[in-house]
Image (cartoon, rainbow over all chains, first blue to last red):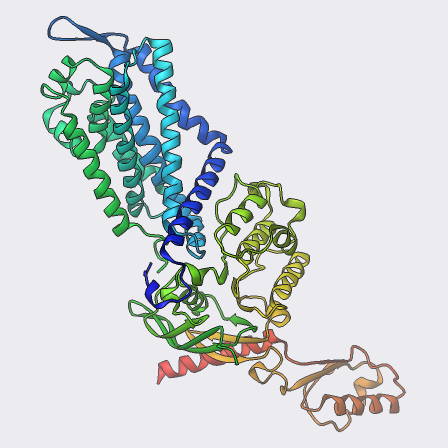
Length: 285
Length: 312
């Protein structure tokens, strides 16, 4: 969109524009939430899938992971961080890339583009929905883990503050990546097929399903280029004792790297979205 | 005289080597209902989408409500309404929610009640969009185009998929909208729709506007030759035809006379039949070419001309 307010006398003043963006972002978020909770299959699978994962994992793998000095943590305690991180990728990246592609194919984006709705409000509504569903999903995973499988939740504000920032930057980076990724999806009907492979691959190599120390080094290198591995690492810091980091992450949690990579991806995905996002269907020019 | 609602000069749009729009000039004054007719692929939709701000042009000038549509900002978009061909994804939302949501985008929207009534959606206001029929979804599209109370509305095939009663109702909506001095640019495949709604029609073929005029006069329709037809039975079939200002093209049994003076022709026929003792001429009719006849002739002439040009 060409910004050309200078030559137009009827353009609203700057402050009015920002108020307008905020007002309409809230309106879009309301509509997104309403459309979400009125689509039972969407609600069911968004929240059921991670629950299934936790139940199946904690039931099938009921072992423990042993530390260097004979300490141990149960599998549920170990894997809950990965489940939350994988859940975030699913509700942000996967879900946004899919729904935005479908809405573009169905002509909703074109329709909105023909109205005075600020384009940013559309994306803010999407990211707000992804944040809310991710938070509910994480709460469900933690509740089931704690109630049924003896997952110990951290006490005190510091771990929860860390949990919050890892969660928020994780949501931001993966949401924006989902927006940028729609550039590779020509049609809504092919969205799932194009979105699932990177998500599934990264789940396997980022230590969601396996102990991270068991993954071959070159795959670890690939995993460390993407946000999921760092989100898992950040959440493990919250839920696991420090000795786990010795085996898995080379001695320390490296939370400063977690923050750096997730922030870098957030910025990169934002720029990629600005450059590559297409409001039109392919073929419409 | 106020500025025209739409003004385009030498408008062109190229896709690679293919020119979808090749030099269109058109002025649509404020308050006019203009219908753009043309076969699929003639450049209708491309032209309209350039004016709506969806596509860039390759060359030429365009002004929509005094603004270059390639640079239309939110303030400009709040002055236009677009009714699109495809329906969006509002399945889980009710008719009322969707219309109210779109109303919130505009600085001065029409009251919700009025839009719902105009679109004939009173019965369906609480219904989820998923449950609507094709025609009802189209009415929601219409409502979404009108809700911002635009000065200019773009209607892309507004009644495709409507049953005849719903089409009449949609035409009423458009007429009501134009009664307050607003401008409409409409594309349609239905000639009766253009005839009912449009002040002027334009025919676009192969990217060029080949004819513009009122539905009554376009393509020399008003002055065109009329056909007087009747069935020659009994004595009418055997007696020689009278002298008439026209040329007999066919018959009997169905006699068709092409004439510039249909009234004189009919008078001659009545006198002739009376002299033969026939007071009622079977199946007597006078027809002028319909808008569809004119439209089809224009397209045929143009494609013949294009073929000749191509051969030369």
